[in-house]
Length: 192
Length: 109
Image (cartoon, rainbow over all chains, first blue to last red; front, side, top):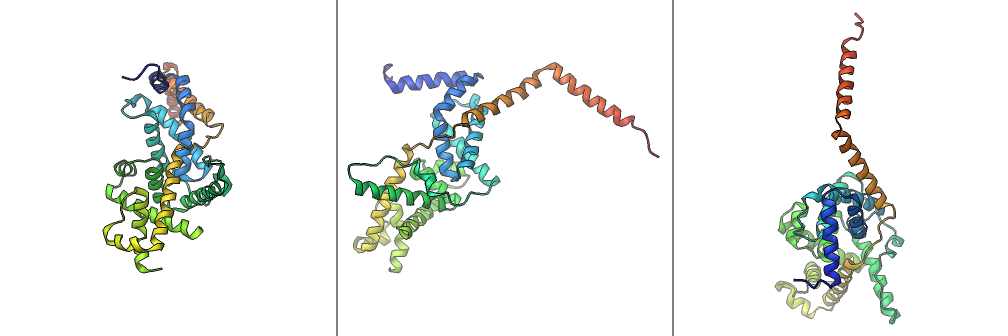
């Protein structure tokens, strides 16, 4: 039993209430959920497809799909996890419909840098430089390889979850990840 | 750079990300190879940075909420119109009129 005063518990209760209202067709409740989760949906879309405009379309469609599927959401998983799955599926659909934008500029990535320790400028500089190279290297990976790296190494999905979501075997997901990491390492080494 | 280093590279990368030992066939090589150890260290840093990206959010475009809600409004308008008997009646009458006009069209022969 969670502590009723626990901020996390309060937040979850509030979210459950919003979900219940949205499931009954309350659009203002859905709008509140949307405001809460749109950044994470867009972030995942952006990491999966690279291009900001395409990511925006993916996020929009994923959230519309979420509204339509919400009555079937049973709350077995967290809402954010459920939204991630919808976003991944939507990204697959869009990927097949649109040509992938080639090579986002490095400026596109600067807004997503996490803060680094300003107390050690040399280390901070190194980390920023690595992050810049890492994001460009991720963009250069072929779509299927980038997708497994994003889902496994950033979002911590299991091989089974990735395999199910991509419609491939667990073994194929492992092999794809294996190759993707090797390619990423090689790319980073070459651009060092 | 040796052929063994190249063969070991994917295993070195994976062991660094997953935090496990390099697979047995390459373990003795990587234990003494400075190049492979440097690769392992670099990939460990990379894995840390990848994991750190999860907590980093990119702000969604300012108009995303509006676009989604506007689409939902369209959805609701369609479903509302399908629920109205008058809308159905109008659609049926229009179709019947179209068929009638088609049948009564002047013959050209």
